[in-house]
Amino acid sequence: MIDRPLLKARKHSERPHVLIVTDDPDLATFLNEGLPLGGFWTTVISSGLQVLEVFRLRQFDLIIVDYGLRSFGAEELMLRLRGASSRIREQAPRTTAPVVVISVDPVELSDESMQTMGISRMLHAPIDLEDLVPELHAVFEEWREAYPTMPLSDDPTRPNR
Image (cartoon, rainbow, N blue to C red; front, top):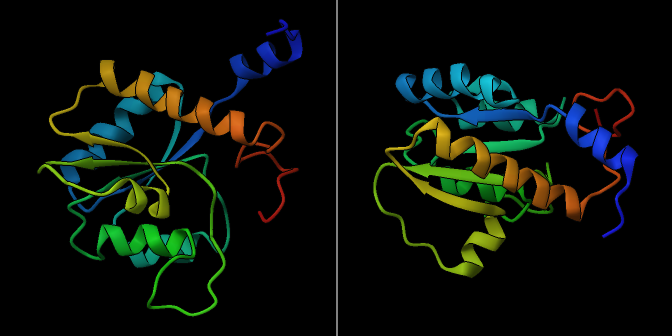
C-alpha cells in the first residue's frame, strides 16, 4: 500500500463517537469514563427505544450494545438499526455504523444472524480497557475501509445529520 500522508494525518486526528447502549450503570460508567482515554467520544443511552429516536437526529461512528439490555431486546434493537426487523414494514436502515456486542453470558448467534444485525464483534465480560480499546479501533478501521470517504458522525459535512 502506498503511504498517503493525508490519510495518515486523518487517522491521527480522528476521534470516533461511540454510542454505548446499556441499562447497567456499572458498565455505562466503566465505558463512559474509560473510552475517552482511548481516543473516543462517548454517549450513553439506557433505552433501546430512545436509541431508535436518537438515530432520527444524528449518527455515531461505532455502537456498543449490552446484550443483556432489559428495557428493549438487544437483538430487536440491532435489527431495527439495520432495517431488518420483521416487526416493522418498509424500514430503512438507520445506520451503517459497526456494532460491538458485550455480553455477560455466552451467546451463540449464527454468522448469518450476526451479519443481519451488523455485529462486528461479540465480546464477553469481564473486559478491560487494555483489550477493549484496541479492539474498538480495529472495528472502526474495518468500517473505515468499507466507507473510506464517509465523514465522522460529528463532522458538519456528514449527510443525514
